[in-house]
Image 1: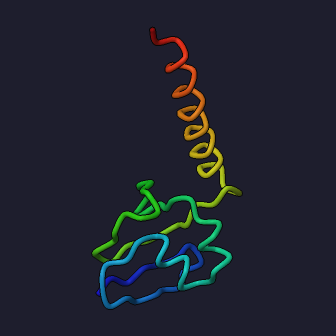
Image 2: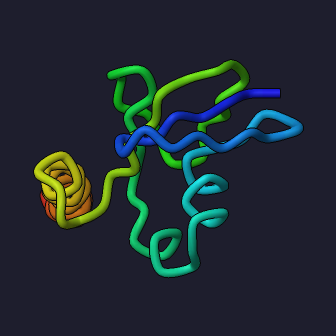
Image 3: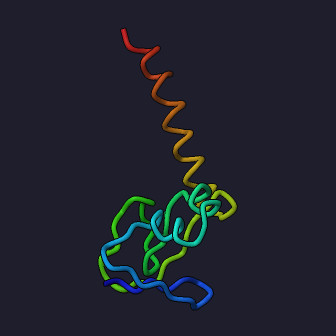
Length: 89
């Protein structure tokens, strides 16, 4: 039963492994919609990665510097894919 500690010091206990998205949803639907990724014990993780043990968690949104970096990186991949297929013969 992981205990998740949030940046404000509050804790949430779960009966099973949870993802960053699950924790965000338990806080509120707006945060879940804004959730891009998480930082578990200081390590950036995908929003769907499971947290199986007690951990500290930061929920990353587009308002965070990390969130903006993730969005830019994803967009760069999207731009490269079509342009690389145009140059193939």
